[in-house]
Length: 364
Ligand code: ADP
Ligand code: MG
Image (cartoon, rainbow, N blue to C red):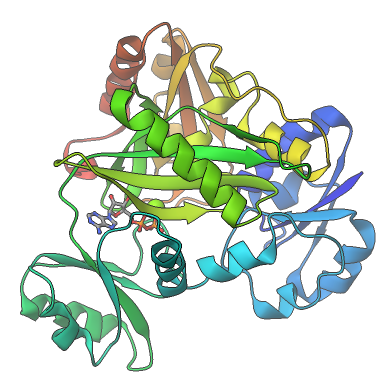
């Protein structure tokens, strides 16, 4: 079977590395010939050649949400997860409204145009988070507004036609996520819950966490949301656990997710392998843990800057290096960590973080 992937980033790269085990061929559509997945694909196509790309593939998936309409309109093979999920993800307003209307728990929010921001914010107590409706990722296009003057920054960076979502600032106890996988027959499995720690809007590290009372609720939400969206493939769901004991959905992603990279070494079947199994009509693999695990992102550092000797001398660590051009805070690679207990994994993660970053670089 030939699998097409829209997007050539590290998520596609790992999907190919895992999917090749099944003998499948991979075709990548991305504007950059040298992106991680484009480099290792059986063939690469730029977006203008979308029609040609479709002639090679039996099924299409995506590893990136901000795909141009000119590409989406020209796809002529089955696309999994369905494009409706992707359509919702193109707009943070549509995504949150969908969740709210279907009765899923979300922080309180209001859509607003640039002009309306000042008025809309009056309905909330400060601080609030303002997120641009489109094209945001890794904390980009997001602003914490503590006083009305902080809006100036938004006025400076955005144009009058743009729309935003204003959200209550959630004073969370913890951020967590899980990933559901669902195949063409409707079989669903859910990966363990991880605790995710971000630094200025970008995931810094995560690890499997025992969230006792919340586990069932989180798993149920991930399952029912993947059914509501008729997912075939992966659905990652990010949550806040609030200090007063509530679970709120922050966002979802119908694709492999950074918080699931640990599954490459800790789960019986990685998220990438299960994506490939799901979209090719194969039975799903076990999402259970072989061992406890976690991951540290390498942000904005070159290969020479990461003390590779020390990191890999620590038992139970593995490096995944994407081969991208270095840019400040860019995801350059990650280090997976395994251990017998969550405590052991956490200790190893702390040690790796100390090796990689100074305190200022990783302020939360
Ligand atoms: P992205 O697409 O960049 O991942 P998110 O909406 O997930 O966008 O926001 C990135 C991070 O910003 C979250 O993981 C969380 O740490 C923080 N954040 C986002 N929304 C809120 C909120 N309403 N209250 C508090 N923190 C938030
Ligand atoms: Mg997020």
